[in-house]
Image 1 (spheres, helix red, strand yellow):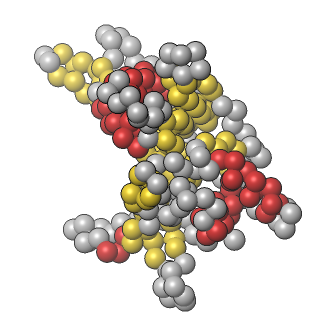
Image 2: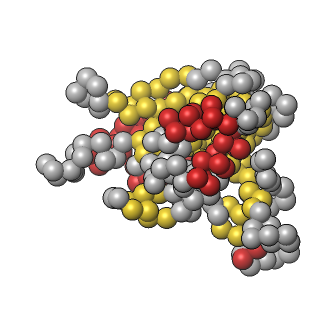
Length: 273
């Protein structure tokens, strides 16, 4: 499982999302470098005649999940394949709402979870492929930051992926995943020593303490601005002075080969305390 936290940073006018990188398998750890925050590219196309299509709108939203990695990543892959191939009806040029994108993820998520769950054995956990997720970003239609939560639900005996809009504003955060309760308790604890410890400080402390075995690894961060969404690298302290390095999912980007005159990362999120 995991912990994912979404919050609005009023001082920056940005919507931030952070998570750990540990992916569990059975009672152990599969990797401490797992992606849980991903971009949603949206590309709208219109016909120019003679079977020619041109893109005329491009957006980027954010997606984050907690739960089954297989069903969540499959949902993201299929849904983003759809969002990058949107074809406008003749004469229609309005932007796509964030809600419409969230509803697409809801539909695809239900498809995968039902398909995978139908193949489980009698002794398997019927929630093995459940996941919850967040779809968020700056809506180009309503011109405000918005966020939607997808929740796997089987309370009525029939599986449904529920969709609900979340309230976005200063001094408010939303957390999902198995580490959600532990995060909130630690945040309250840190408030006794700091007037406002901040979400990133709490997450960093949570990983340092290894509060629970299925939450760990490194921090990953995604940021939504009015111009779009992107994953940003994290500046790690390293083993001492002069040992700091920039990473994605805990992977040192300096170990990557130079991209024909380019390096990886141009700004990063640094120490949080």
